[in-house]
Amino acid sequence: MDTTRTIGNRIRARRSELHMTQEELAVRAGLSRRTLIAVEAGKTDITLTRLLSVLSVLGLEIGLTEAARTKRRPRESELLEIFGEDE
Image: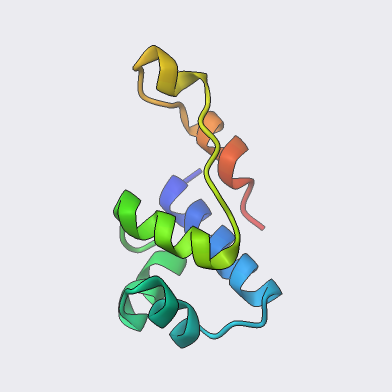
């Protein structure tokens, strides 16, 4: 499972649920449409700052897991708990 692709799929799905265009989301989140397209396609990483901006516009947030408190890198399965499975 590719975490970058999973995050992109979840962003695209939520944007669609809200009947929002890529252009609308990109403008409101402060990034280019080209960048958003690449993120939704799982073809590029997104900085945490930009991700938080996109999630805020979409009415979503990231929940922290135990991994953050133990200072170890989160496992992919833990990230999938936050972002869900590919749809």
